[in-house]
Image 1 (cartoon, helix red, strand yellow):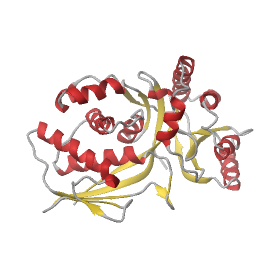
Image 2 (cartoon, rainbow, N blue to C red):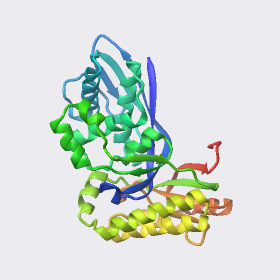
Image 3 (cartoon, rainbow, N blue to C red):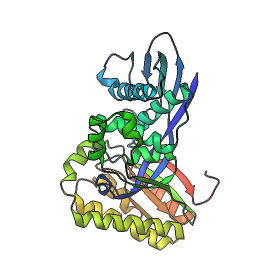
Image 4 (cartoon, rainbow, N blue to C red):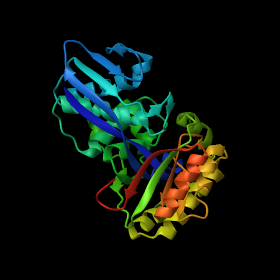
Length: 335
């Protein structure tokens, strides 16, 4: 049995703008994992703990994402002169509690997980860029409306700056050209690691409200204008610079700006719980905001001293916001 795993992700800044080509987003990997075990077997058998049944490769709506990932990997193996053979695949780790998802990018995580499992099964090593293209191709073929930033972050397992590509162009290539040709093309994206130049606490607060990202995106996308895009790009660039230079005041300022840009885009992004999560950082040496599509799920915070961290955690607890994850960032030994 071969075991692989993939992490979750949360956006720090650049949400919604990143849906347009050439835009920037800052995204952080969250070490809450989905795991898979895979081995060759007599017959195809795929099981996920999200469902109480297993399937083979016959189309099944519950397993469509996993099955379509396998189909694309079958094409990828064929390009390499290899054949997909029957295997047993088991996936565990729901990224949810009591049926409520955390909003950590579980669909992106499962696609990367299945690809990693099949690559490991066939003992194929690929670079992160090709892994990103394979995972993106699965979602683009499905008509997914996301930016693919979640995939970039989940593959990197780090704090990354992602610059988006033109998804419509690549989707058209996938329709008209062979997979091998599309994978060899320059998609014009970039993924780079960001190293904070100061220590701070990174906290994730979960509102326990479920947001349906794809519906939120559909609804809010029409509000995106050139002014929002240029402001967002400038804010993300300034935030990355402030992080790398270790300028706490500037980091707080830029994250507040990123938050205001989202509020200006649509009042639906900040639910009452997310607003409370954000406002809990007032008068502290800390800053909090919604993360991702908004409308529920998680918010994030950065805190620059111990007292602020403790106060913020207490305030969140009083509001019924669950501390899902905490990490000391900006130095090597991650806690």
